[in-house]
Amino acid sequence: MRAPRVEVWRYRALRYGFLAYDWIRRRFTPAGMLALGAAAVSAGLGLDTEQSTDYQAFTFLFCLLSLAMLWRHLFRPRLLLGRNLPRFGTAGEAFPYAITARNLGSRVERGLSVREDADEPVPTLAEFAAEPGSSSRWARLVRWTGFDRYALLRRRQRVSGLREIPLPDLPGSDSCEVSAELVPPRRGKLLLRGLEVIRPDPVGIFKAFRRERSGATVLVLPKRYPVPRLTLPGCRRYQQGGVALSSLVGESQEFVSLRDYRPGDPIRRIHWKTWARTGKPVVKEYQDEYFVRHALALDTFLPAGGPRLEEAVSVAASFACSVLTQDSLLDLLFVGAEAYCFTAGRGLGGPDRILEVLACVEPCRDKPFDALAYSVLRRRATLSGCICVLTDLDEPRREFLSRMAAVGLECRSFLVTDGDAPPEAASVPGLRVLQVGKVAEGLVAEATRP
Image (tube, rainbow, N blue to C red; front, side):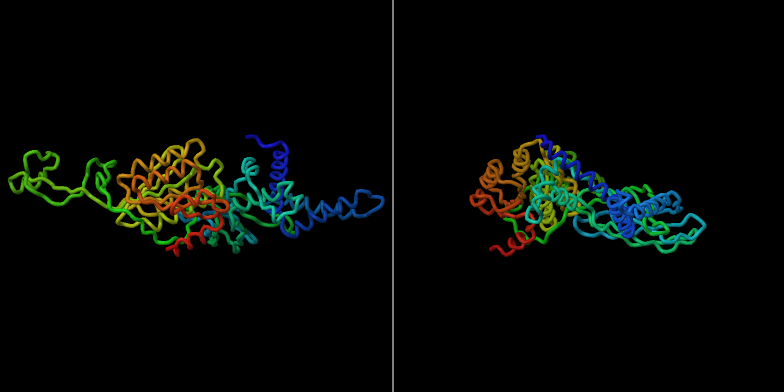
């Protein structure tokens, strides 16, 4: 659906206005901001040169600002910059790292600072049109312009901790290391486009930049909450193929012992080394393996994504770290471009593997919820229990929960909502409702539930 023309005009005006503000804020020092504001005021007051002498102040400030901005072309430090980044970060939590700088020139470099150039996505028109904003904090005129919505979107997507880090004086061929930290706003891949070397002009008004394009990425894992230790009902189930999983090596069951050959035993089970040593045929004996296997079903069927999906992913990540043990398997099931199943546990990887997958989950826009329901129910024979994290409670989702109860699959279901619990939640036995912004409190309340 196309946005109204007035909404498009608001979006464009806010986008270019914020881009201009960001450029001014990054380029001018506090003294430069004051000089820029004074120049603008004196320009307005000195329009009539016969009635006012304010134009003289504007002329002086204009020349001062122009010379400071032209000075940046003389700024050519010879530095080699690098980073020592961690492999992972966590959404909403600061991760520290080190920045190294080496002076390749012969003169001493003084008064330098370095700043990370991180990729900060600009809110799209679709996100701006869908954002409800926060009307309780803004005046009516500000709400009409859409400033509150655009500001909230920027704050939600912006990388925190981006600041100028002073460098010590660097003699020729010397190097140094400074500490930095970033707070990624959300999960996914955080793109660091490069590093910026900064030095203000001699007057201290305008900052000269030199960018070094040293791109790097950090995988940001979902935010996790403290969750109760769930004891999922259900018994150990037979796993065809055993721990090795038949999808990887065929019908590979759990080895028990060796025994004498019996007519009808398959030739592939003969243990040739023992036969050569003892002089009589011996076969390997296996037994079917039974162990605990849980499913973690994540509802990604939200056309626009948003906070509800992000909280649902965080809830799923929290339970993945809590439920997964060395003695069980956990199947993460969700639907994106297709239906996915990622298994961890018992030598197939720990919670880190599940978290890496959840960091890249995208909303599903072109498939019905039945795709997830079918993916879970077709595995019901091997599952001991299931944790469902839902983002809605329409008829297909209620039917899915009913079908799992009908086939005897024990389930713990959680509904992530933007507001109060929907009326249909009362009719679903055992459904826990988690409100966006109060998920941690809701999970703590789950721990005290009898």
